[in-house]
Image (cartoon, rainbow, N blue to C red; front, top):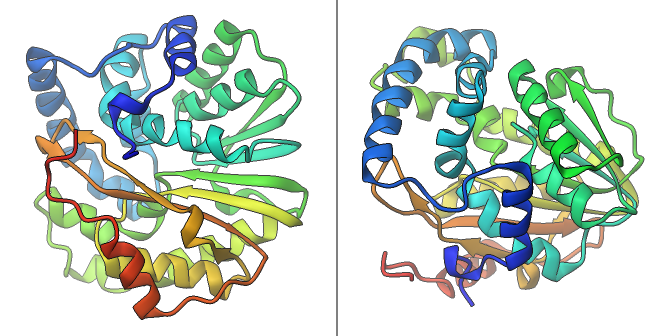
Length: 295
């Protein structure tokens, strides 16, 4: 079954209702608001954010309860759609760290769904941490902690059974692409020194450094092209984490700002070595064709 809005489980809707998040994507008039607000503010803030590795655009998004609710589906739909598969794979147990936790939805859901787990949410945005703590309060969970700061300030400690990364890689390693999307010169001098592949490789090493010897990684990323996906899988492999393609999937969220569905990969990996070639990856990729008509 393809992971779309139709595959969301009732318990996920129960959680959304419990913490006061919207149960449905935005309607057309709300979508116009999203395009206007997000587009304008992203354009004016992006250059500063990129140059300073500053989550300023997310500080704006999570500044108020209203903006958090309005941006929830546009920003969190892929994460939402990945949660049924996370549940199906029964990966959440013991100690869990969610990197780039944002406003804390996924981390709080894991703490609520799995009360015996110990969850740590790491997020650079102060407003994101504030919203996450409020969600935890509403959910009544006490088995979650929050760490405010960049992952670059987070000392790796191989103490986690599961590392989750929901839409984090592109924030670290695709700044030039973001710049191009929002009308800036991705080839200007200020971006010439950014080695995007190195960002991803460093992040993969960081993730590996957090895991116990038998730990797992669950990585949902906004990497739409096969080459980008293959590069991320290769970075994980170089860091000693091997993706199991038989357990990996795609999600097909409807992108509110672009007006069409995306196809984004979920990679599940561990330290158990797997055989993987470029040809093998291409075969896996082509087993999940996407013609834009996923329901």
